Amino acid sequence: MAIKIAFCNRKGGSGKTTTAVHVAGALGIKGKRTLLVDCDPQAHASLWLLGEDFRGRCLMDVLTGKDLASQAIYETGMKGLSILPASSTLSGFEAEFIRKKGAAFLLGERLRDAEKEFDYVVFDTPPYIGLLLVSVLTWSRYVFATLPLQFLAVDGLRELDGLVKKVASRANRQLLLKGIIPVMFNRQLRSGWRLLGEIREQFGKEVMYPSIRQNVKLSEAPELHKTAFEYAPKSPGAQDYWHLTKMIESKLEMC
Ligand SMILES: Nc1ncnc2c1ncn2[C@@H]1O[C@H](COP(=O)(O)OP(=O)(O)OP(=O)(O)O)[C@@H](O)[C@H]1O
Ligand SMILES: [Mg+2]
Image 1 (cartoon, rainbow, N blue to C red):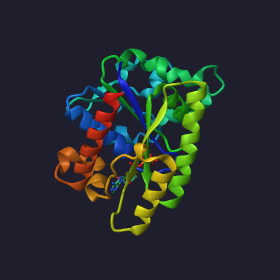
Image 2 (cartoon, protein in one colour):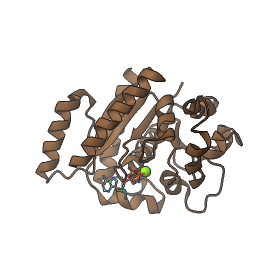
Image 3 (cartoon, protein in one colour):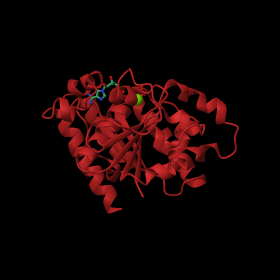
Image 4 (tube, rainbow, N blue to C red):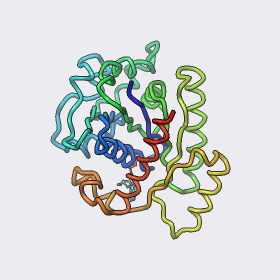
């Protein structure tokens, strides 16, 4: 069975997509068969990896039962990495399914068969709490919070921790907030270090994962439709995500 991990933070622009794409990309390079599932109607991961001209099947087609998941999975051209893309149609999921019984289990039911082909399933999630995020949490095993080191982001972290506990108690006993990944870290700023210390104190040092430095190569990568591993392999961004993925892999495969 695939190891299922979700990158979450209900705050917009907090590095979820950048982290999901790079961790999934690094896992692929390391020889793991990896599926990135884009669960955000903004479809940023899909635009990044498949380009603006992509007009194929998407996650909403799978959720509505129009297509099987296996029919909506595309190779990215990157070693070991496939994607189940999103499109803006996914924004209709909430309205269409919220009143249906067991709606939060639908994503897992629809992905179950396709998942068998992969070692890892990586979820990129939307920047709000709703049925899509709850569906991802209902089907994932490990949650990683991406966390820009700013005061307000910590507030969102507490909220995510509460949500994970709620879903774990009601629908998915295996679910765990496994790690906190500080992103866009500017080592020159004292406020960042202070916040890092506070988070470590509140959540425990065992959930702290290696931080990702602020690096322009990471913000340039999407429009080139590449990861930093291909576009700037020696950059701090590529190095940090490689190191992070090694840590994720070793901790999850020990479990
Ligand atoms: N370490 C970094 N250094 C510099 N820029 C970064 C870094 N990580 C992410 N960015 C940039 O910050 C912006 C937000 O990142 P990203 O899209 O990954 O966040 P997100 O949480 O997925 O956003 P959304 O909530 O809108 O989906 C993007 O422009 C991205 O290129
Ligand atoms: Mg995103």
